[in-house]
Amino acid sequence: MTITRRDALLRTAALASASLLPAVPALASPSLRSTRSGDIDRSLHAAVAAREIPGVVAMAASADSLLYEGAVGLRGAGADARMSTDTVFRIASMVKLLTSVAAMQLVERGRLKLDEPAGNIDPVLSAPRVLTGFDDKGAPQLREAREHLTLRNLLTHTSGLSYPLWDTNVLRYVQFVRAKKGKDLPRTPLMFEPGAKWAYGSSIDRVSRMVEIASGQGIDRYFRDNITGPLGMNDTGFTITEKQRARQARLHRRGADGRLVAQPFEKLEAPAAFSGGGGIYSTAPDYLRLLQALLSGGSLAGTKILKAETVAQMALNQIGHLEAGIMKTTNPALSNDVDFFPGTRLRWGLGHMINADAVAGGRKAGSLTWAGLYNTYYWIDPATRVAGVIMMQILPFADRQALKVYREFEHGICRAARRV
Image 1 (cartoon, rainbow, N blue to C red):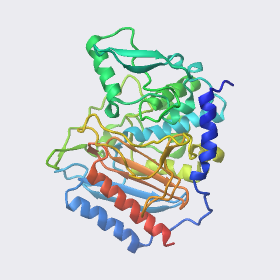
Image 2 (cartoon, rainbow, N blue to C red; image 1 turned 30 degrees about the horizontal axis):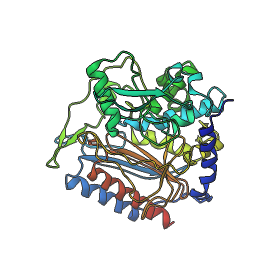
Image 3 (cartoon, rainbow, N blue to C red; image 1 turned 180 degrees about the horizontal axis):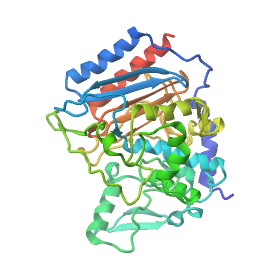
Image 4 (spheres, rainbow, N blue to C red; image 1 turned 120 degrees about the horizontal axis):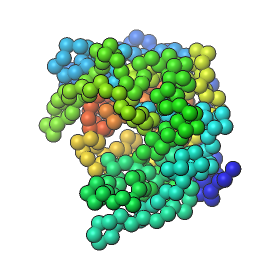
């Protein structure tokens, strides 16, 4: 097995920084009483009544029981259809957790390896080039990467791949390529040497392709056969039916005046190819089943999707002391600046963001989380053995009102969990 010097350092740093994460106590499953869930109900209803959001579905669970479920408001502003727990949402980048689980399943089976060159599986990744800057005419300047890209780099967003939505250099590069149509330029260069920094980008899209190559299946079929099908996540997929469309929440855009405007539904067309980095549909109950499986060590109701030691590895800080989770937008219409936990040390595991410090009034240190572009969010708190998911359909990402609703929901769940 080939391990680069930087990967070896990162693995050492990940083990050394395990002290950032608390030991997970064996706690009994909490149970929310109606008076406590009533506080959460009132908070969600107040946000809808104030027209901060059009509607929301929120759920929380322990490893083996449902703790809270709420569906408040309308599926679309001005519409008659009310939110229900089976409402279908576009969850965008929350599919990245599914792709990470898929990759780790293949690691367990010996089909993928975390620290071997990713180019051994996908030749596209075999000779990455790093952007070093732009010349006086705006032309990108590139050099060959000194380090191999690895699956660990990709799963932890330390690959050097970055999204134009949160990286001005990527945006400038893309604009140059589109305008000049440079035939000798790579479509997606690295923004830095693999392992040197953290940047949120298309890394998991590349993991998705590695899963397809290693398994011999398209990512949609792989999910159905190995994750969503076994877990009974029947409303989770890259396409939806007409019947599911009837349950779908409508996307809303928040204007400069703060008002939300409902958007037309996207066409029901199957794309030519799927990617595990985005573009998936789900429901809160479906996604909560995935979270419960991870919360319980990889199994749910007798169905095992991962080994317990693999789940624990995914929850461990893998990036040492690199900072993660803070992103500056290049397009405020699509995303606000992102810093979910100001002043908190944020790290990354094999699939999740990790808050290395406890969040005041909320989750414990070592909790796991991420989100989707349209303001869908999840968290897993191993210390209190609680997981939660909340789904809205609003742009821009990290919408302040949506985040307020999310925080109040989380705090309500955490307050109740502490009292039992």
